[in-house]
Length: 476
Image (tube, rainbow, N blue to C red; front, side, top):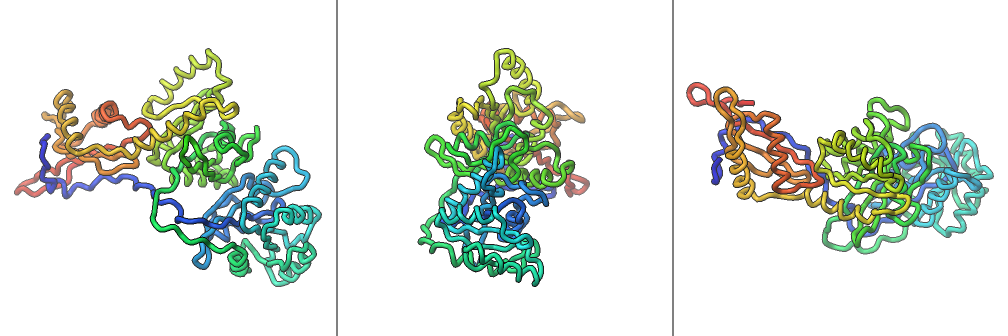
């Protein structure tokens, strides 16, 4: 290996290794965005309307009541105006257990909104439950736009006029499924919004994006609520309560983080169906859109194949990784002994992940999450100077050269760091490297430079093989 730049024209015919692209680092547009809450009783088409407003199938929709359970925000825009639309679970006045928690989330969405869109089923008309919801909305003193959904034809549009009886003003007949009347509704929403304040000039990075992922019932929503010091997400002992990713801004250790609570992953996406299928897609999208994945494992249970799949999804997405062993308050000495053995056996391919032991229920050690996330992100964005990298690699390959293959051992001519988030390195060599030696280089790279909490990508770019007459061909 040389200490000066080599002529890389020798490698021109060799395809450059493909790496995953860096995630977007820009935050949402600077300045304040008004909030529009979509509320109504179960199964009136709220999530379908949200998808119509945001222009894509993002909110999980299924023809059964109770699919949406948390208040879920999405970015939307209409006629040049940006705003946040919040999907909510079905509101019921005398709900019990989980339904009561879902209704409470809808009421919080109303209290924090600038405009409320109240959805009624036009095919059914106003019910006693709708009238009780109107009383709740009046107490909020928020601007309310009344919508008669499922008005899929002209006759049903006429039926919407009966909704005047609710006393919320003119009802808007729409079909969220087919788009009828949605433009007029969006114009009305914009008219009801408060005026936008002056936009602050200058761009700065938004909060770091953290995806909370794990199999069902490991305590993701409980952890989010503990960090937020309020009920941001519905919690239930029944697995699979969270369906849509739930975004929340959370302050930890003096810094704001954007946490995304995701649905528990039970199966591979291609094996799931119905709500579970779309929830899996949303979770995968949340991981792709995050900068760091906090994977929750149940410390009291054996590390399962589901846990392994969740960890793999974060690593393959190229995101920083923190493993949080939750429910630590329930772990006794015997379990700790066996857990150490499981970690050595089941997590040996990712020994670099940052690990913390917490209890979302009691709050034990949750203050360790912020430093762990910062450490993983610092590694994820770490860059090594080219000179230092090549000096270290020269010493390493001289002390432990590549095994001889075909009568000679391939050598490293030059190395460079091609990018960050995650760190990506390219080794320009005289020939292909064995996979085992490539793993050896990565292990030594971590020992020297750290990268705790971040995947590292290393690509080998062999020099083209010269043929007769000096013409080269791609090798490897």
